[in-house]
Image 1 (cartoon, helix red, strand yellow):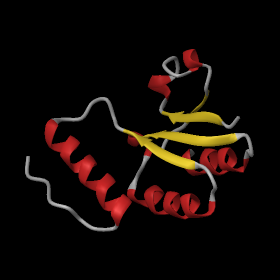
Image 2 (cartoon, one colour):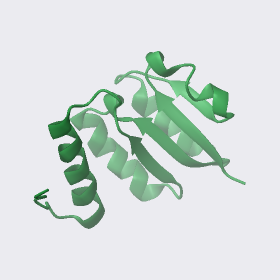
Image 3 (cartoon, rainbow, N blue to C red):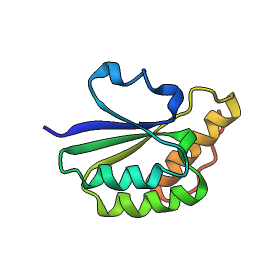
Length: 106
């Protein structure tokens, strides 16, 4: 059975370790190194990354890794976002999934 790994900032250190999953603490600078090491582990099948770690530069590199890796990369929404940011996040997810920008009217 494949394992789940979380990559989070330091403020979430105790949150996921209680679940029995692997958790790696990172910042924007170390995210890509940890992500490459984690995707190289054949036991990992799902890697969940805290949204706060992803810069526009890291997002492009993540797309390359996602295309070449057999597992699933998932972005965990930041717990401290306002209402407008939630809509932006949903739009980004849809655009990433289908390749088009979709305007949401709620």
